[in-house]
Length: 269
Image (spheres, rainbow, N blue to C red):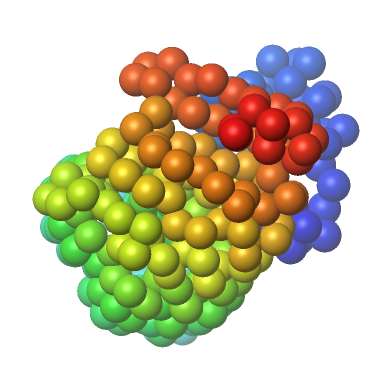
C-alpha cells in the first residue's frame, strides 16, 4: 500500500509509536489513539470545507449511505468503511463510486452476500471484508477487480467456498483467508486452491485454515515473502526462494520462523 502511494512512513510510525499515539498489534494492524483518529477526521472535514459530499472519506454509516445515493457526490469518495452495521444484510449499491480505492466491511454480522455490481469498482485497491460471520457467498464478478492489491476475508466463518475467478486478481500483493469457513463443508485439496498459483505478485499470504490438507504449489509465487499456515498442513514443498517469514499457527499460539530462504528450506525439510 505504501509503495503504491509513493510513501515511506517508517520514521513517522516510529515517532507516533514513541508518543503512544499508535501501536502495532500482533496481527500487523494499527491501534490508534482516539486523539489521532479525531485529528485525521478533522483534516478530512477541513479539506472539504465542511461539505459532506466533498469528503474523501466517510466513517458514519448513515452519512455514507446518503452520499452514495447521489451520483455527483459519490464520485468524490475514495474510502468507505462500514463497521458493526448489524442491520446490513446486503451492501448498498456502490457502483456510482467509480473512484473508490478502499472499501471496508467489518463485523457486519448479518451481511449475507456481496452483489455483482462490485465489478464496476475498477479503481478499488483495498477490499477488507472481515468478521462478517453471516456472509455465505461471493460473486464471480469479484475477479474483475484488476487493480486490487490487498484483499482480506479474515474471520468470515460462514464463507465455505470461493469463486474460481479469484485467480484473475493478478495485481494482489496481500491475501488473507484466515479463520474463514473454507474447508468446513469439504476438505480443501491442492486443486481447490490452485487459482492461488496464478497470483504471481503476492508478497503476503495467510492460509490459516482448519481443514487444509495440501497447500497449492507456491513455487510460482516468486515475490512471496510472508506465509501463514495452520498446524494441520501436511506438506510444503518447492516453496519460492523469496520466502523470508513463515508462521505456523497452533490454536491460540504460533511458531514463527524468520530466516533467509535457505534457512527456511532447511527447517521445512
